[in-house]
Image (cartoon, rainbow, N blue to C red; front, side, top):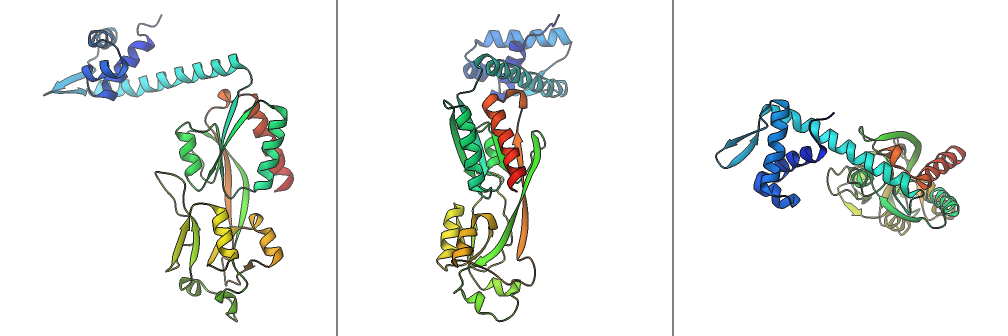
Length: 295
């Protein structure tokens, strides 16, 4: 029989999160005496001192810090159990939230989404088009259920999904194509580079070569493609995303001495497989199948 309830651990954590007993009582809408009583029962049951009073501050003791780490894990796991139970009770989920890096092949994504929607006609799909660390941030903040991103998260499930080939391109009339020899990185420095901004709010990453003296940063991959097609600069773009422009002569691969082609790896990420409903599992299964078949 457990001597300490989850609610008592929750009150203990609230004191830490809100910075004191009075603040915690306001933050979680419990009386100050109830919170004092809960913390006192933990201290009495475990024979430890969780807090010390330093001036006007309530400060964790060394034992309190250790117990907080354990309590955080316990409360987080309890929340996961409830979420899994809710998923099982509801059956098929009504909404699926997915973050997909902009470099993932769009036609393949559309096929997977359409097949998933055909299986679950009432499913509402929220698609977040992300860049670099944007998908990771959405997953970590529980704003999406699944992410396709270039950066695995150690605390989440992740598997390698596919490699995306990038090539350096510019409009056929761009001055770089007038150079009658192999183009060096030094040549690129004096021309405008178009890059796509990381969609994350924190922990932003830079992707690819960024050595140009003049650089335009845009929000969407489609904007970058349109700018290159109009002769406004050069860029490394996913080959699969510009096949039409290459075929119609709107873009031409640059004849670089090296690094004219490079590869980026994408990963499939989700936090807890037990929390995923049938529709999410179908999406993942169809995604794996289409990637294996087409990439």
